[in-house]
Image 1 (cartoon, rainbow, N blue to C red):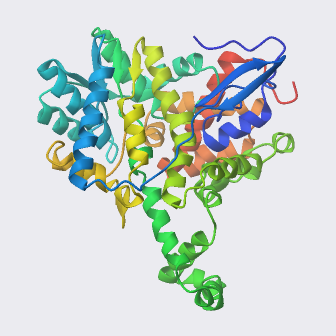
Image 2 (cartoon, helix red, strand yellow):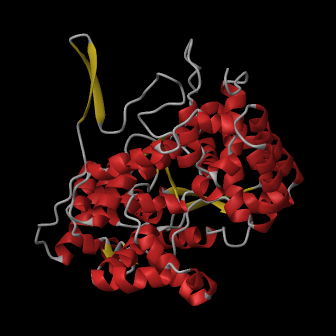
Image 3 (spheres, one colour):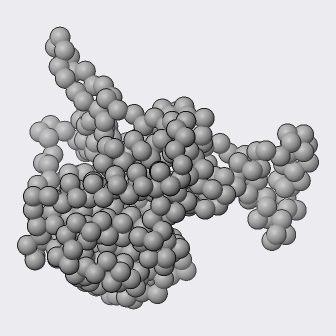
Length: 468
């Protein structure tokens, strides 16, 4: 059940701004003024009349071990097999299956333990470039599991978004939450009371494309300082460089390479790219600290002082990607569907094993998670090992353009934020009239984030307007 607004509390405008920046509200902040929550790996206790909050675990990386690749591969398989088997005990179990390496691994080891009784659920989308059902089918056939498929529709979004908004105790904008819910709901309808999910593999074994991009940026940092600062930086920052396509691309690369982590990630941030002054009302912006999210990111990035930049990225993503986004997505959508969920990839022993792998086992050149894939060769189908990363992403922007009911629902939701004093009228008008039709993938995300916020406020704090 969603939490009610605490008596006497007000919505935190800073938390609403943080939501628009992160698409979730990262812990320990909450959407309510004066209310905080525990971060993952923290505990709280009262001592001498005061509340003491402390961290009890932090990721530490130590790649000094000298095991051979064969020994490490054998150990990895044993740990993952044990974790899946253990989490599958004591209930009617099913598994999410996106067709990626992690969910396919969980389904595979579950099949090793349960045989043909293993059941897996997949979500598809009737939209070019989004549907990955073919890979889920490959994994299901390879392991001989009972495979259930469901194709989400625009009508499902109109019906499902209010349920998500009602259930979450604060705004949550991860768009793959809705597919996860429909997956879990269909599993629960057949008697499943526990789902197994593959979350965690990317943040442990190096599966996100930004890790490879960072390696490219680091290569520029190895260019002699005199050459970089004396010739390349001035040459590629000149106005003429932006007029020549090939040179423009190189100039963009150099400009990004010169911005250190984690500040560089802001260049990809949706809110930053849309422009806060263009999108948000002046009164809202005056009430918040726009620099707060960047300071928080820098603080989290500084927690890990490992010599490897990759390991520092992994530790950063354990917080923002896993703790604040992916785990709440799966936990709460399964809860809404009526079942439990477990994460074998986050088994303590497996996390410790991953954190003792050298960085080159997680990123080799531009190859993501090389050790994981090599250790899984012969177990996972080759097509799964070589596919590009996708997941349960929605073709939301394209659907808004072609489905009248969804378009009306989305526009009405976003428009309500104008009356609440958060978003500018001109931005909303341009968003639906010009930007979304031109770039449905990019601007569809903006519509989704604002739509979920509007739906959450409607259900939890319907009287809210800026200044009240």
